[in-house]
Image (cartoon, rainbow, N blue to C red; front, side, top):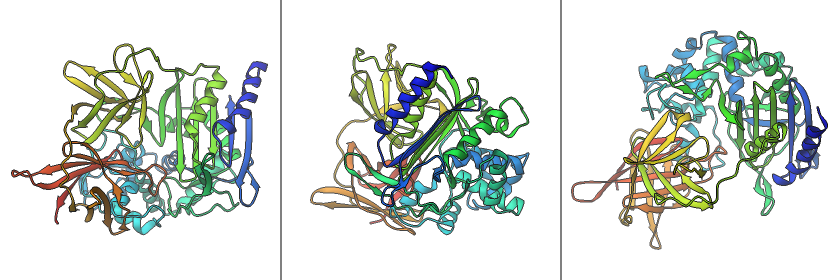
Length: 519
């Protein structure tokens, strides 16, 4: 390592804990299998004063998905061997159910079960284990799209794979993972299925440096979707394992990184539990993980043979930190928006017909727009050609109107502008027959509030936000998982006489659900 790079990494190690403040964290940077930086700081448990070290056990959450796919590829050279077991867990879908590869590539068309759990009235800190997961999954009666045609992030895709693997092999999923860990040299990695606690006392924290931190309460029981527990040292071993097998097409690392496509042949930017993307002009593979109190991210540049791992036991942005570390290694400038570009005239509220979701576009800062469409707001930089993008989502104006493009989802739709003010006549009970669940909208002091009810309980009432005529949103900013549904779109449906008959409800994680007014 040359002196210039060593100096940049030293500054990064000093800067990162204050740029992303919280109880503790760890960072590793590798190149060609060599560790350039291994750094840990703060506390794994602030109350018990347990230091955060490279050997601290950490909840890796959705980084698990690539390990689940690794176990699948090892046990089933043809993953289609799991299709029958997956279909059996989706009895109401029958032949229309997705296969194992659809699940591994997040192309299943299923709605995310932790989002759907909120529609069943689940409190945020409620238990969610095998019985709850099986019931939500088995109750699926329709899909968001035909398997293979689109991308949508769905956690139970990987739970279905791990359950099917157990049935197919007759082995416990933890034992299947152990085989992968042993091959990669990860001695302390394990299946940390119970999210209530880690065996070494490591704690995850909600809150902020400004408002204070508190230990996060989680009661999910998970498996192939997010159950990995491992240390920074374990993850360094994983990065070395991936780098060592990069050039052998028959190796497990090469099979995980193999190109995947949608049904129509378009390249897919997600496959086998790994996101494919571009960082500072370089192709990269990676994935993040998150639960309340935990954030992590790992990425790998195959051509440059550079790896970055970031672990936070708090809710700072681990992806941003990983990209900052990558920029440090590459000595790449971080692009900034062009503040001289004028704000476009097409800000406002829109409906996207295929998904049924609202798209709200508003000025954010000079050179940037804020788009509210997915599970969280996105900042898009204005471009000289009149479009706006963050590299993954595009807004493009044209003669036929404004187009929303999300290439990673194989999606392009024309936005329909919305106007007007919602009428205050939506109070009542609404039932979704598919879910056997209800939405209750009540007026309290002249304001509408809504809450979900179902077999998991009675969710809290939230203040509805008016958007346009017959268009509302119901916020859901905390959920069972770290990534909440965000804003649920409520598109009101009226009969011939103008009376409210029902509504269509959805969010990015779970959309296209019909509710009928029943009272």
